[in-house]
Length: 125
Image (tube, rainbow, N blue to C red; front, side, top):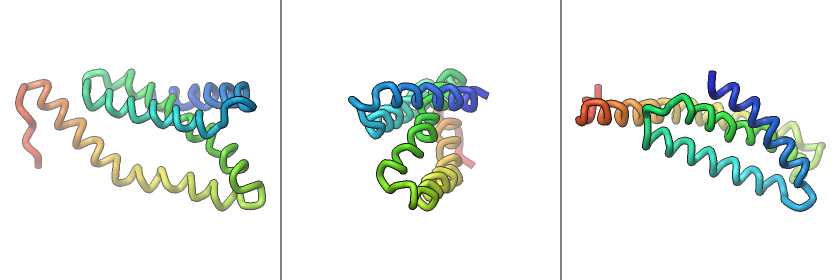
C-alpha cells in the first residue's frame, strides 16, 4: 500500500540525503526533520480524514527516515560493539507502540470521519 511504498522510497531518500550532506548536517538533524514530517502527516489525517491515501504515503516517507537513519545514528553514538543491543531496542519500541497507538489512532480517525460525514459525532461502542 501507500505506507509501504512511501517507506521504501523514504528510506532511499533519507539515506541519500544524509550521506550527501553528512559533513555539514548531522544525521540526527535529518531524523528530527523526518519525525516532524511524521507528526505533520498524522495531524493532516486527523484534520482531513478523507485524504487518507496521500497522507498514508507521506507518513510512509517520513517513517522511512527512522529505519534509514537509525542504524547510522546508533553506530555513531554507541559504536559497532554495542550496535546489536541498541538497534534491537530501537526496532522493538515501534512495534510495542503500534500495539496501543494503532487502536487509539483508528478510533480518532473513525470518530473524526464520522463527524465530518454526518455533521454529528459517531456514537462510541
